[in-house]
Image 1 (spheres, rainbow, N blue to C red):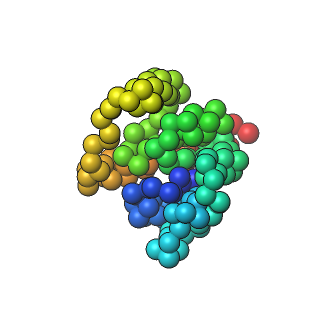
Image 2: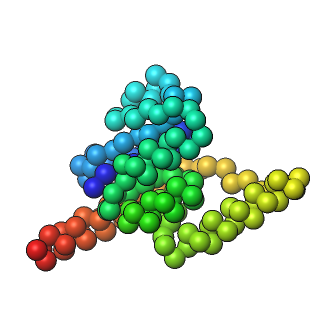
Length: 157
């Protein structure tokens, strides 16, 4: 199991590293060259991709496998990873499941239609400390679930 991070605009990199260290999980921060800075070198394992559209998403999808956890705020990427039997969580701590991905994608599409027709939609609320605390709690929950399900799977064989 590994953590794959859509790192171009991820506000919880420190929290990810802290939790991953406690659980001894490999973390891969995938980012485009357009978002790379010397500060990114402190992120652990960084995977750089070109700055073309969807390059980060495609790299994550190609590296993802069953049981991995993907951190992203992109519902399209989350849907692709869920199809590969991964877990997905947003930087605000929302765990994205198969049950709600369709509704999230429909809402994203509706907002896009409104914007393209000249309308305005509300953006996300400001990111606060409570968001990062919620993220840490739910990331720990996902990691715990993954470890227990992996243990049960190994015990069956």
